[in-house]
Structures are given as C-alpha cells and as structure tokens.
Image (cartoon, rainbow, N blue to C red; front, side, top):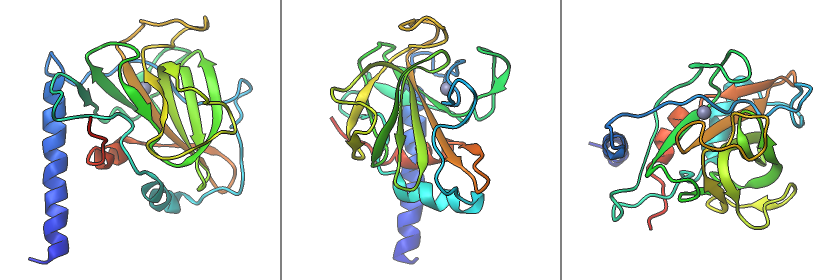
Length: 227
Ligand SMILES: [Zn+2]
C-alpha cells in the first residue's frame, strides 16, 4: 500500500474514532441539536461586506486552505469534557421566523457557560462583534480569502477583540456560552451551552451564501489543542 493511502486511511480511522468518543462524552449519549443563531446579516438584510466574490466551485478549496484548527480545545486527559456535533444543515429553526439552520452546533459537556475557550479556526480580521437576537454575543472573522467565519452564542469575548483587529488561527476569540434567542441583549439560558459555527461567502453576483461547516469541522476535529 502506498504511504499516502495508508496515511489517508489512518486519518479516516482517527476521524471516526473521534466522533464516536465525543458522542459518548455527552451524558445522555446523544448529540443534541438546538434552535439558534443564523446568518449574520445587517438589519436591512444585506451582507456585511463584498469584495470580488468567489465562484461556488472554488469555495471548498479556499475553505480547506484556510481552516487550521478546531475551534474548541479538547484533551484526552480531561475525559469529562467533550464536544460533539452532527450534521444539522438546514434543519428547521423557528426563532425569528421559520428558516433553515445555517451552521453546525458544537454541543459542549459540561453545560457550563464561559468554560470552553473559542479559538479562531483561521487567520483573519475581526469584522463584527456584539449582540444579535438569534446569535447572541457573536464574533465574525473575515479571512484573506474573503470568507466570513461566524461564531455565535458566546458568554464573553477575549480582551482586545474589536472590529479591525487581526487574529491568527488558534487565537482566543472568547468563551462558549448560551447567549441569544432574544431581542434583549445579555439573555442566556434559552438552550444548552454550545458553539454555533457558520461559514459564509459572497458568490460572483455578490449574493451571500452559506456553506455547511459540518464536513470541515469533522476534518478539523483531528487538529485540536491539547490541554
Ligand atoms: Zn446553530
């Protein structure tokens, strides 16, 4: 067997193992899905920024090149701590009107707000920060490839996170929480603690398009900081 094939099979096996292990880490043995955050659009519904646009057939390569690290640090030495997620792409969400779920929810165990650090998956620049009714305290990172990586329901932000600040992959953005699902800023507790991850880009016509983060997170799960 060629070396490269063996490596691929090993990675595949590790990925499956990871998923199994992490699923088990939740106390009830299931991966929960919740109703929450969605697109990070401006109040008038327009997208945040638009440069030149990316052809849909090129988006996968750009994302794969940019993603460097799983957004939640995990450790085999802290077995009571777990992160699990499933493919809930376009599942029904009802807060703020019927819509599809534009992202992946990383459910966290223990269910404690402010416990898990949230790391930037990529290099980039902070574009948005603050309260959204659906996403709670969110932060959005714009990458060099003009992709918008959206992290929602935080409990708090890391010091110095302001729009325009440059961040590196693996840098602390804030802490996972359960904020959101209310027009009242600071509302928490409407769902279990988790990190909602969204990925958006503008296509060639300047139309904001969401990408399913699930396969990328599955891939990234192999790249996590040990603690
Ligand atoms: Zn979500």
